[in-house]
Image 1 (tube, rainbow over the protein chains, first blue to last red):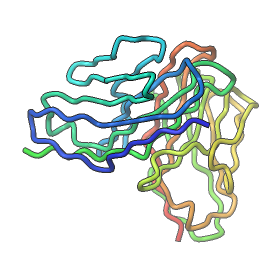
Image 2 (cartoon, chains in turn orange, green):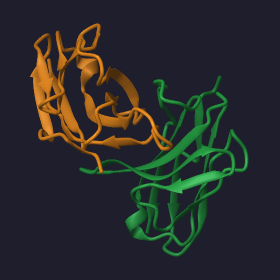
Image 3 (cartoon, chains in turn cyan, red):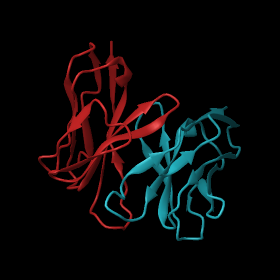
Image 4 (cartoon, each protein chain N blue to C red):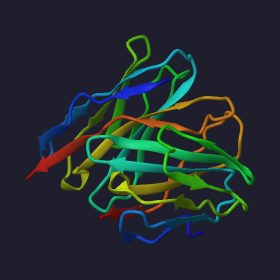
Length: 117
Length: 115
């Protein structure tokens, strides 16, 4: 079974600074997807960024980028120029690439990010 | 499109009561699922469905029942509520089958308290 580990229960960053959230995972599969979700106080789950394991290039979405290290099974999220609106719980998630139940997401326990003005 | 809708948003039950959490999507998605979110535990999969008439268990299925009679609806039933089922429940759906990427869309969640 796949597992996802977020070793930082809480992180804080100053506004306009950069912060990196860590995620490691365990899988025996070679093809899969990795995701970062943001959950603000509204509780809504928002997809921030995704990475296909077969792609070597790290995904980027505006101020959000990932450092995907497939051999190390590491998938960190970097938030640049942090804004107050980035304050939220962030979840790392894994999904199989194919197979009958390939839509199932396995989540880490989350990292609560605080942004200080 | 309304996306994924869940009702109710909040619910308080007494131990032993039963209830149904409703989930509907209007995107013609094949895949639907239920997760529960507990503090410090992330989201854990309860049940999922890959199409009408097909359901399967996830990681934490005990105490919950599901059915999928239509593509649009995927209700979650609590058979006899227990305090351990106090949680926030999320429904999610995703598009056509196969191995291509399809984003999962989440509903707004239902906060359930069992006294």
